Length: 299
Ligand SMILES: NC(=O)c1ccc[n+]([C@@H]2O[C@H](COP(=O)([O-])OP(=O)(O)OC[C@H]3O[C@@H](n4cnc5c(N)ncnc54)[C@H](OP(=O)(O)O)[C@@H]3O)[C@@H](O)[C@H]2O)c1
Image (cartoon, rainbow, N blue to C red):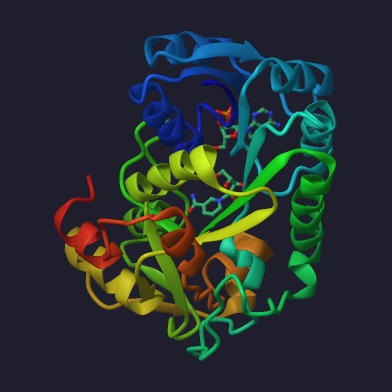
């Protein structure tokens, strides 16, 4: 297939693009930095210079491709609308990347939630994530207009990226913080838990979704879960540091910004990827972010 991908230089997009190229697909990738464009060529990806604000470029690329993978930004509506409009009536796939902070709660690190969501559980969406929820609704609704829209909603992703950016978001930031401050910091008591998924398993899911996901489908991507205390302790052990430091969510918000404090590190986000296993035959091979930190994480 001829595929167009946004976020081609990123962690998720680079890894998915690498997998698509390895499968023999022809991949064109959006890139806003000319130096990175040359690096993409070396990865077998044809660069398309532009940004998410270049709606004409996005529409043209979507029209000329057999399918689109959108990984640049889970919350950027205008770019999505431009691509969906261009694909109207085509029956082609558009796989959009969301993120499971969508159902993140307001635990501020101090509570393990019993709530576990799968694709059939009615979602509970905090005010701060309503815009993402609405955007997802727009993507799914485009199925009625002849676009084979699919949403993949990854949880905490770990593992080394296969593209230009090898680093995910949550674990690398905690490692960087620990290196700067000599201690791993968790929000509140760190009792909150996130589901997790390995980047290689996630890349498999994108392939399956492109091949056979029905129009208007939503899939969580998860195979395991861990609390931030457990994650913090593994990082601390790998770095040879001592006990964790608890930072109240309000203080973390001042240090790291509210989104990081309340959602990325302070919330529970527990999901089960039932639909991808049942409907697409997705069989993730990695099940423990903790084991990855202990045995594989590059320092
Ligand atoms: N990593 C996770 O654990 C995770 C889990 C769930 C959901 N998500 C969501 O998935 C999305 C991608 O995450 P990621 O970890 O792959 O992030 P990333 O490594 O920062 O990659 C983002 C990519 O999008 C590109 N991009 C961003 N804004 C752009 C713009 N305005 N125009 C053109 N390109 C743009 C970046 O290009 P440059 O190289 O030029 O910066 C980069 O290629 C985010 O919305 C994130 O919230 C991530």
